[in-house]
Image 1 (cartoon, helix red, strand yellow):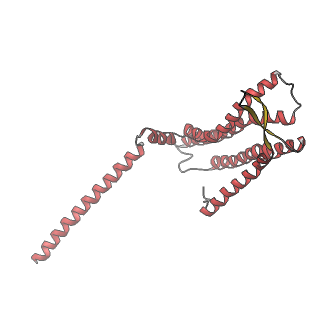
Image 2 (tube, rainbow, N blue to C red; image 1 turned 180 degrees about the vertical axis):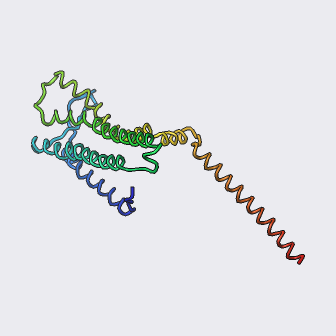
Image 3 (cartoon, rainbow, N blue to C red; image 1 turned 90 degrees about the vertical axis):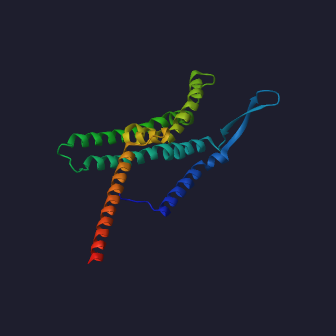
Length: 234
């Protein structure tokens, strides 16, 4: 909470992420090829995009290092480590009023935060696990027989697993809204054009303060007029 990222540091981090991602996916541009596998009609050809590596071992090594480790296991370990530090910080933090009548409320708030962190990690792990499990079976396992039940399951489940993994990019805001009532009220205000409850309180406070300021000015003005009248009379 105390560490603030400067604009220069933010640009550096974003640039590093893009360079790292482009470097990892660059071999796909080099070794992926469109292969003709048949014809749908007389004039339409049916192509499929496949990896054509110089050797099969090279493709397996790239998948294990670049995809499985750097794109799944390493980010998962980083998330677990960071959220673990957050969990320790939240659990050990003592808020004002803790230990008195607010002890139960503070404890429930801490438990809710920890549940949210656990669910975010679990959803990340679960959304990408089917896709990497399928490709690990294809890359590392023995070749499966053609026209077998296993081939049918892989062909059907692979697109679903790809969709499930990509959905992780937009699931976190939904989880945050589910665990945070203030965030839910803010989303409702944006979607349905309703003002959050805090806005009305702020507006009332501003109105009350403006009325007090106006009345204070009126009192000051009237007292100033009285003083000026007395001075003129003297």
